[in-house]
Length: 273
Image (spheres, one colour):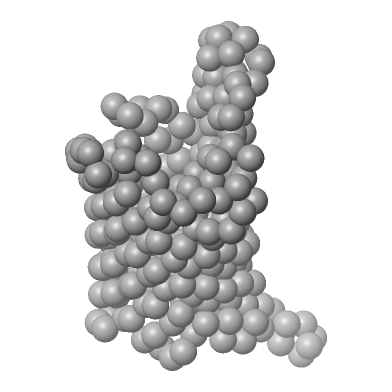
């Protein structure tokens, strides 16, 4: 009986640790969707980021340094994220982005596609993610589904995530259909102390080929592998600051039909108790 109670208490302690210390900021989440800490009712986050493209991969996966003048070389972004707890298992969220593109020949900016959805808590360490990205100007309608699994090893929390996004038109008779996007990630969060933590992430993106009349269009598939690290500092009971840097690996066959970028991000998160 004593052993059974001990196992229950230990399991609850591990689950609480995951809820208290796992990467809470959407900017540090591999799927771009944050989480609420155990004692929070909601959060609001503002993030600004910069991406500098310095090379690209062709359709055979060969890497070359430098970009054509027509291709973008710098991308700036701003994003507002918010999440609330409607029930212990149901956490709705919304993301509002804005983009600025700068190349050697032109620059332009626009409000990005708003996304909203839910994080469903199956158990504290296993979450189901569902989101809808509304169509807007340069970006189509996309539906996303994903799973996120956390496992604690002392002061280290491992997170494995997978998500797919698709245009609902693939289920219709429309002639042109966009490819399905896949994202898989592995994330390690190291808890330095109560106020500081470092996260290492590896993210693999794959976009399958688009098609016309169910025939694949050549050179429309793409993939890339990105590595990043982030540092989070909880300087107030309600406020956290996070800095991130990363790179799309500039090695041949580590990408296809994608630019190779250096990226950085600064995020400020406010929790509501």
